[in-house]
Length: 199
Image 1 (cartoon, one colour):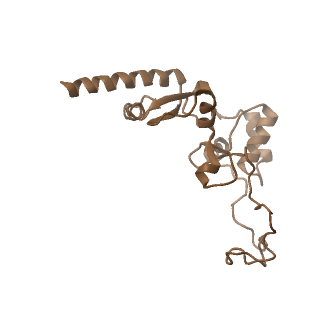
Image 2 (cartoon, rainbow, N blue to C red):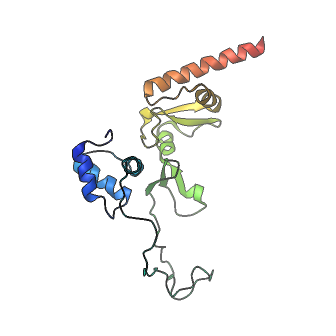
Image 3 (spheres, rainbow, N blue to C red):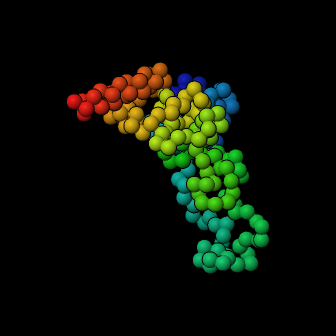
């Protein structure tokens, strides 16, 4: 049990049933002062064959909240669907954070506009608050490969060329210092390649 010790594992078993991973992570973190994410617990549960009993499907006999309305089929809605000015039940306020399917933390920055205007990657916000806009042709690299470890010390600005070399040569590590060394090596590889082409 690398993620949890025996006491923590046993506690997880005691609170597992009927709870989603985000709630489990919060309870574990509050009790033991950890910083577990829902994704980490999901992986841990799969690796140890643990199930919470939640299927993500409605149970037989469940009445949906929109029963008796035509909101899904009537584009204009009806009198029993939404009142003027009423927010949707899944509305998230500005500043709300969530994790996307790729493991990145997203922050809601505004209510209006298309999806990519309303939500922004948190690591980009943190970087740009100190360093300004990310230059064209560049991206941010997580030094320890943890997309949820969002701190300036863990973010490295690299060019697209550097990133391509880092991936090609396998120079990105879980150890931050090794990744930073990998960026230096990527520059050296690029210069070597440029000299060969020049000859």
